[in-house]
Image (tube, rainbow, N blue to C red; front, side, top):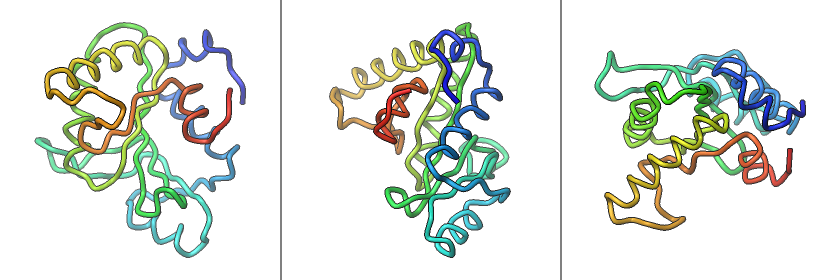
Length: 166
């Protein structure tokens, strides 16, 4: 599936999740229907091939204890799993709260996390990220808030994660 950045900007969160899932499928990841990280990890170990599942239950800070991540993946670079959060909106809304919540939850879980966003959300997420680096005095590409590895647009993620351009 190949969309221009303009079309990607118009995608809401759920549509963005489906697009990102199709991106993983195109890269050879097998989609599973498991809802717990342990099940996804067990299937990865059984198959020995990259897998992912959507809407997987993970621990959360300061809430009922659990929430859902958009995608939970496991592959040779992330044999213990990684979380993909997809954020799509065209207004500021609760961008700061969402990004801060993702960062806080990231610090409480053992998995690397990636934020994939449409361009509008990415601009706000990136601004928040830069403010956090400044506040913590940890400027530079090696700084990660908790286990967050970065905030990306779809094109940036595909290029960084898979080494391909959209």
